[in-house]
Image (cartoon, rainbow, N blue to C red; front, side, top):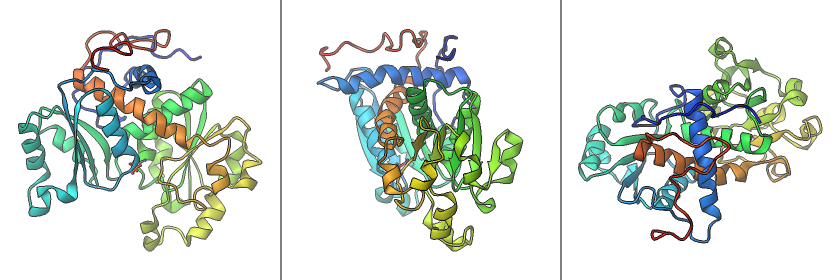
Length: 337
Ligand code: CP
């Protein structure tokens, strides 16, 4: 087991906007706290009073299955009052600005605003205009920090380390907030990151960030420990960034033939939603090396940790891997359970 989390961290941040600005120890603090919260989901009564009396609003301006339900469940399991709100039914459709919407929500006593928005920087902008905590649930092509945290959590849970692993992020890296957050997080934790895809879908500047770039998945297959297969955004096809979906799949999709050349202990991630038969064939998506549903399960614990940290801004030392269940977690069957 690598030497993580030994240096104790005090969480003082109001918001979680991305992984770019987090330190290695802050990332480990979230992962270690999530380790403790994972146990809550195994209890018969899956609830703790950690955020009792706090109000969380999930404000989503884009479609979402995993992130939205996961944040809702995370808030509920921490005993917060949770309100889900879709951008399409908000007064922004009548011309209200996003900042005015956020300030009006805050005026009702909301403590944490979870925001998904198609514009890069939306969460950052809102965070500067409200005193409530803001958690970025995906902003344009910028960052999706909790997705990367749950990806890294899953890698660590399966392979017992992050440092030194070779992680390939495959697909539309240019337009992917998942890729961007993963690159920041994985590099801070010492992984070797590869960006794999056609030249039109991999930004040129990545090499300067220390990311290894490959346009040939077959060349690197046998050396990779973790494949993170990004969703191909079908709307990009109209932009001429790759010839056809079939061509993309032939060159960059994970299928039975390619799996024969992959390390037996390598794992396959996908943030979802999957285009079965495009990024990944159904037998691989449902096969023994796939951890796609583990990612979703772990996402709940990770989001509980994030909501807890920004909602309470912990000032006491967090647990270490030797004591992964933080002392703040109440025992099962307590009065609020
Ligand atoms: N991974 C992810 O963000 O999925 P959703 O769009 O369903 O939330």
